[in-house]
Image 1 (cartoon, helix red, strand yellow):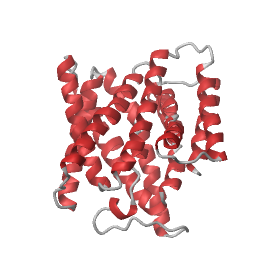
Image 2 (tube, helix red, strand yellow):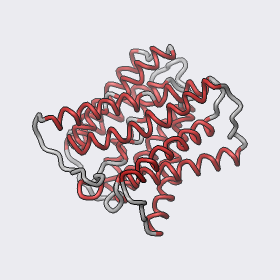
Image 3 (spheres, helix red, strand yellow):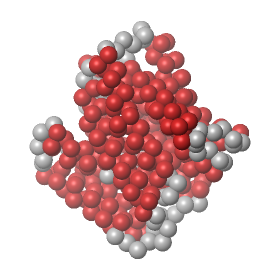
Length: 312
């Protein structure tokens, strides 16, 4: 879910010794970049499956998120300190990172992970994918980015798809989950715009390291304050929680950013539209979850809108 918020700026975001430039064509870099983004997309698609499975073994949402970000923070700090000098952020940058995490990313992730409790994995991720279109609207009002015909058509397709899904009398479509997933989409969009500004002056690796660190603190404190931070569950849940921190968080972020450097954000975002479909397939295979024909039709409209948006 988090990948599209952190598109790297070529001059600032690339790790030391790695060029952020990408060229059109079909060279080895293009093949590697495409492969990395596909790997990242598959990793992201496992997020909902891992979370729902951890829940089934007794992990709470707050515990799941706390452990996820502890594992991810350990991985990012290890990479950061091995590859770069210890990061030095100004007080203003630290405050901005904390505010963006608490006011944007943490709310988006928390609402999405609660949505997993009420919706199938595929449906929750489909509704989350409304967020690129919300970004378009926010960018128009906040960043003064103009509307184009493609952007308007993308809006119509995306919100039309959501209307198809929400307008049907479907048994088992819990409106609490729908509201939470759409809230996650809104907060994800807000954080996307917020994070894009910060990435103009903070390298991506540093940004993500502080992001997961602040998220770890936020979810740990939330769990402790609500009494929902507990570890009274079996070893199976621990396996899925560690998986969640490593695969759809640390590994996925690392792969997608290197891929974006090689093939560019537009092509990477097109590939990433496979995520809801892969999530739905994994949900069917591992959890026995099904989407109805009408839900799949609405989801197709949403993905067409996202695809059109990603092509500019």
